[in-house]
Structure formats: C-alpha cells, structure tokens
Amino acid sequence: MPPPNPSFEVLPVNVITGFLGSGKTTLLRRVLASDGSGDTAVLINEFGEIGIDHLLVGEIAPNAVLLKSGCVCCSIRGELKDALAGLFSQRQRGQVPAFRRVLVETTGLADPAPIVATLLGDPVLRHHYRVGLIITTVDCVNAELHRSTQPEWWAQVTAADRIVLTKSDLVSQQACGLLTGELRDLNPAATLALAQEVTEADLFLLGHGLHDEEPSAEVKRWFERSPRHRTGVLIERLPGVQPSALPHQDLASFCVEFANEINWTAFGLWLSLLLHRHGKDILRVKGILNLAGLPFPVAIHGVQHLVHPPVHLPAWGDADRRSRIVFIVRGIDQQWVERSFHAFAHR
Image (spheres, rainbow, N blue to C red):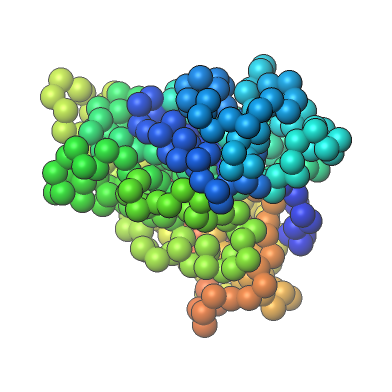
C-alpha cells in the first residue's frame, strides 16, 4: 500500500449495480429526469433501455446526447476504459458540458470489482477519475432467489456503499424488515434506504463518499451498527438447494478495533500481505486509522483485493480515537485477523 497522501481533485465515478430486474433502470431514469443531475455524465450500455427520448435535447458528440436537465448521457461502445477516456477528452475539448461526476450503470450480471480495478489500475484514468460510491439495487420480491443461486448478487451487495431496496410495496412489511436486517448483517458499513425514500438528485446517489464536504459523516455511518461476527450470514430457506452449494456459506462480517496509535508502515505491510494471501476471501474492508504522528484520522476502504488510495480526513467525527476496521470475509476468523496484526505490529 502507498503512504497516505492528501487527495487531489479528480472526478468521482459512481457505479449503479444490481441484479437483473432489480430496478437499476428505473432508478437511473429518475436521476436523469432530475434538474439536480445537470453536472453528471452517465455511461450506459444502451440508450433505448433507459427510454430517454422525452428527455433529449440533442446529440452533442458521437454516442453522446444532452438531456433537458443538462446531464450528459453516453452509450458505452467497447471497453469502459475507452469510454471514460473518450468522455474526459470530449470534456476537455468543450464538446460536452464540464460535468463534475460520472455515473455508470452496470449490466445485471456484473461484479463491481472489475470496474474498481479499471479505475485504480489504469495510469491514465487515475489522473482524471477515482472510485466514488457503489450503489446496489436489491429486489425485495426476488432477493431470496437471487442470493440463493447467483454469486454476482453477493458480490454486488458486499461491494456496496449504498443499498437501495426496490419493490418493497410488493412484499409484506415483515418480509421487507427481515431482508433489511439481513442486508445490514451482511454489509454493516453500507447505508440502506427504500427506493421511494431516495430523492433523484440527493447525495445518496450522487454524493462523493469520502470526498464529500463532510467526509467524517460518511465514516461515522460505517460504524453506526457495530457488526457481530456471524458465519453463514444469510440463512437459506429455499427448498431443494444444498447449503454446501451456496456462495455465502462461510460469509461473516466483523469490526476489529485497536486502541493504540498505529504505525503506518507496519499497517500497510500487514494489510498488503493479508490481501495478497486472502484477497479473494476479503470481500470488503472499510476503516478509520489513528496513525502515529498525525493529528487527524486516515480512512481506508477496498473491494476484494483492491484498496483505494487512503484519504486524510480533516477532523475526527467524535471523541473516539480508536482505529476501527469493518471486514466482510469468507471463511476467515476475526480473532485470527486480530492476532495476525498484533504479531506483525510488535515484531
């Protein structure tokens, strides 16, 4: 891991993901129709799926149109890397409005990790873009089927910074509450909301996460619900499915805490080695660190083996100065993680 450095201004890329039929397109259509989305560029696979004709002002560049809200909507042709690079080039040449963020809608079968890898790993894109929020839609009607049979569902939910529950009006209040509780157990650091509660242009969808004006508030949400250590977070209830075949069989979430100041070099080496050895089984990590020699905290977060650049926060959110890290893992014990860090740090 590189040492933490203050972030320079780059454009956030927010990702809307979710399984097939979970309501991504409906949510995105609401965003596009909102007056508050005018400083946003949207990348989608096909214009026709979104139905933007009634919002269209006109074509402004190849594969790009301007909507009445001022939002730039672009169709992805080929690789995401090329689409993002081309979009920034058009922005620099003045062919499209000077948007402040990019919103990418994935296909229903997409794992968000490759998008994160593209943004973190490409040297050209890193100069212009960074990963913003990962927003996952969850279909209340079909959630049990999706989570029982589709590994992509688990990847999308565990990667999420925001989870939007859709179609809640089609299930009982009890079923919706049960699903909400299970999702909070699975990804305790994510913020959950019902689709009808999310306004089109609020920071739930278009925020910049740790790079918002008050990043300490974002970090505080990570720890609002201290996760308990649970193995097999969601219990399979569908008949005819063997538990041993389920992708979530050994999933657990937990929060580790360190009371003393942490040496950044020792921590960076430890986390790098941990992710190198167990990256495919560490689905999500979010934490705040009290580093020796620094007056303010540093936030870290990552998806699978991919770690975002550390972010210096301007202040502590409260009087608590403990370092805390939320893990979502597969088949890894909390006590083993804690012992490995203490053994490494005290060498």
